[in-house]
Amino acid sequence: MIDAYVKTLASIVGSEEEAKKRIYSVCTTRYTGFRAFFSEDLVEELGELPRVRWVLPVWCWSRDHYYAGDLFVDGKVFHRPQFPWVGIPNSNHRVGGCGD
Image (tube, rainbow, N blue to C red; front, side, top):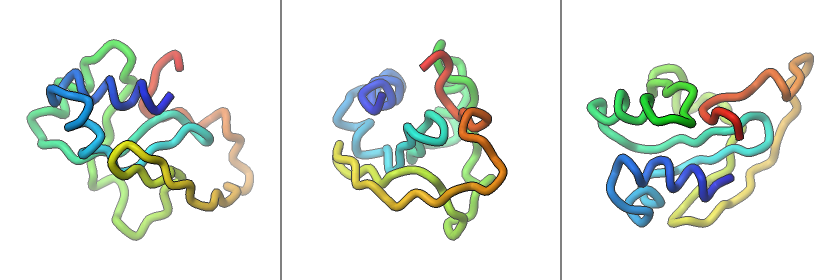
């Protein structure tokens, strides 16, 4: 799954190495998706890729808002504790990937 995130972003930024530098958070449990640093001009290009459902802008989440993803640094995943979302089933939270 995480390899698919890297390859998806690499198709826009030019290489898997660059994609690994830009991705800073990944999630494969509550939903499928990743967070990455990229410029506004790449948002539309990323959103048009075949397996991308949507791209959310950074203003949707403040830096202090809890995000259920794991930390991703230089191609390595560092798991964070996962807290339950009371009353919200996991199946309703799919962000990013399509058909994963």
